[in-house]
Length: 260
Image 1 (cartoon, rainbow, N blue to C red):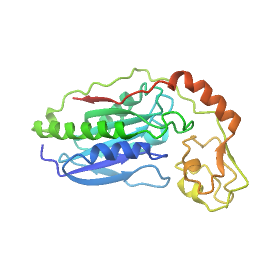
Image 2: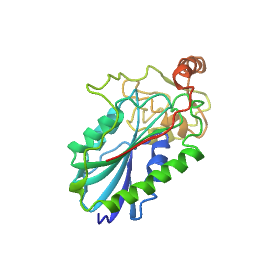
Image 3: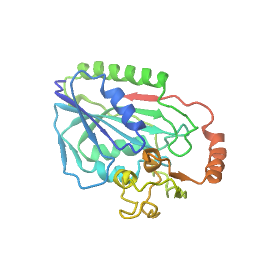
């Protein structure tokens, strides 16, 4: 295939999905582009041609593609554009997310060629899969990227891409969000970083101590980005969540890869 450019596209509130996507895309021998769908705000329509490829990544929330990411992916339009799908999950399970992402991109005119389900540090309980993608993960992601490069060269045309088989079931599982509220401590400096970085504009533009809990998706971006460490989930609540998740997230999961 005569590919001219590969674009890394990601919705990545805590940065782990961005890391996974760019590790894969960085192994492909073409001009590199980037499109970050994380920040709030109006976006144009993005169009990709047959002689391009995209590596598109989202985190997994409750076994699903986050609704916010799903809406923003509708701004992408392919023209039989080859796509590599990436989901990152907090060492529990990715369930229906890869299948859902595949169907979204098919509707948007892309041809899914390959996919990866990548364990990453849990966005809420960061002691789970702490530091992942780690050195071993990064090695496997780069290897997968190189394998993709060879697969691209084998294909004479986008129309030769077969049906990509990925894990997942329909109807998709229901996801109603996480009933956790982020608290703001006295160390808040009113710097506005959380306001600027919130993907859904859930934080008051005049008082960062006020969060719209109906709008908040508990992506934890504000917690990770806060320079004074003022934003957090109640310690006792977090310990209880960690204890409950330990039963299903304790054993190390490894990345899974799929190529059509």
